[in-house]
Amino acid sequence: MDYTLSTGRDMEEYPSLTFCTNGLQGGDAGHGGWTRLTVNTPNTGATLRIGDNVIELEGLADVSITVFGDWEHIGFKDALVDMGAGVRKLER
Image (cartoon, rainbow, N blue to C red; front, side, top):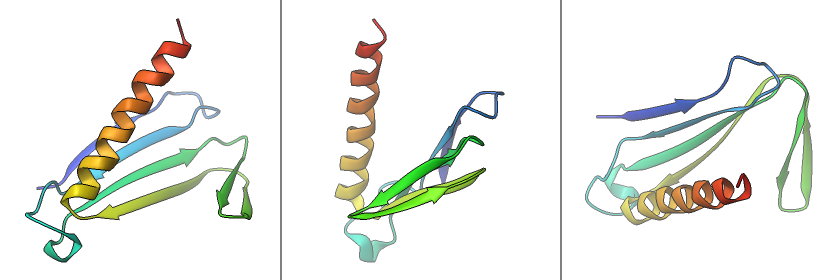
């Protein structure tokens, strides 16, 4: 069963995030497990960097990264949780 969690606000200048996964599937990528984070960039534009390549995103665009496998799912999820905790500390 797929699990999807989305965040966002009503203002078009705010990005929204979607975390989606089919959960742990019992092994590596060959077992069919995947986890995806999608960022819907704000209408004000953004840049995407892949290595040394920079792509200008104008207007609304979805940017996704997908990892495959159980350990990759756990690592990706844990990294997002840690990132969220770190960002919260910046607000205080």
